[in-house]
Amino acid sequence: MSTSIGLDDTLRAYLISDGMREHPVLTRLREETQRMPRASMQVAPEEGALLAMLVRLLDARRVLEIGTFTGYSSTAMALAMGEGGRIVCCDLSTDWTDIARQAWTDAGVADRVDLRIGPALDTVDALLDEGAESGFDLAFIDADKPSYDAYYEGCLRLVRTGGVIAIDNTLWSGRVADASVHDESTDAIRALNAKIAADERVEPVIVPVGDGLTLARRI
Image 1 (tube, rainbow, N blue to C red):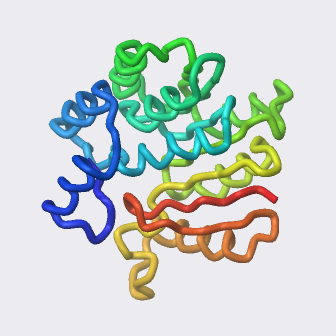
Image 2: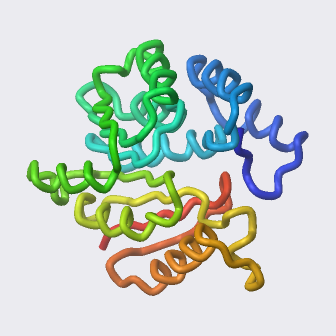
Image 3: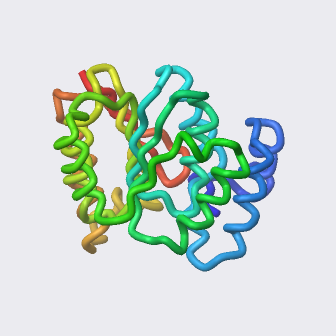
């Protein structure tokens, strides 16, 4: 399980117990995923709670998620949007998303989820072809880092004015601030952070929750 930067185990446990409300299905999913390989890919529970809060604040009815894994964030957002909402989930893996499917069913939100297996950029193009431009209230990006810029540009077309693009892992365990670190993922995130900071199409802030969460409100 991911945890927010700077939290020790004691403070993390306190945050989960007293700083948020976690649906029982999310608790079970978090504990199940924690026993799996690549468990660190799961969003921190406080990040899931923040995404759910964004859904409610935006009164979001259409949400796009790029990178679903075992379904913690999508379940949290689907629960928050209520009946009639729709979240399009993009992922390459049926193994991980089979676990997500069970969580959606257990939480009673399976009818709110449109899972699309395949390259996310293909799904973005398909959504644009379907006439979904400016049709989403919120997009959450949490997938392969070298493609982050392309995902961001696609989401800018799909998210409405006043909507929000949330991007995970933008502090990247602090590596983005270390000028001596250069690898494909770190360089991609660092470049996107600089681009968004200067991008007049959005109003941005990086929140130190999880591994860094950028919120970019489309102007």
